[in-house]
Image (cartoon, rainbow, N blue to C red; front, top):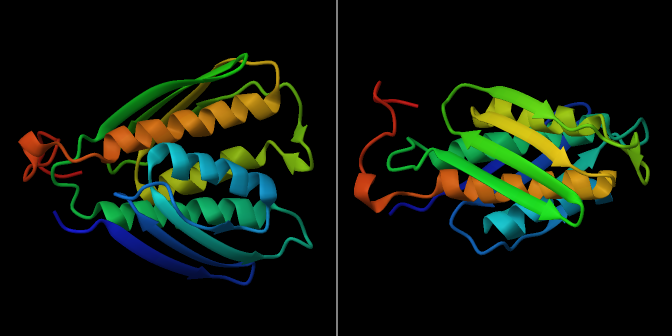
Length: 197
């Protein structure tokens, strides 16, 4: 099987980002977005998805975290799209329920080629430490738009916002891991009746 590795560099007036991704990794890598809570969440994708992810971002954090969080989502999405290549043999669909103490989340992924975000997380507070929870929708929207995937996120239970979002990222990691796997029985085919994703 060809190596499913990508490297994306994205430079704007607001952020300078480099992402390296190996879909067939072991959960290794270095995360330095400049936003510690975002690093903690992407670490869940890395470890529970078994993706090797390196991210370095220099962002305009003197303004706020918005551009950095959104642009990291965009660039990580681009890296996934690039590493997935022609999508031959992919399982395409992935789903997972992940608990974290009282919190329970369900994430469903379709590597359809059609971006769509359907997210329902009734956060119990507006901030986790200094992190504005509204920025998660910006991250996920940037991610799905550029990874070209449909993503359903539902926080089913939870009283602690940190637990809610961490269970979401863990479920996302496992759902992505499932969707990105190559099915040996369908190695040279596309999982679509139209023949493309």
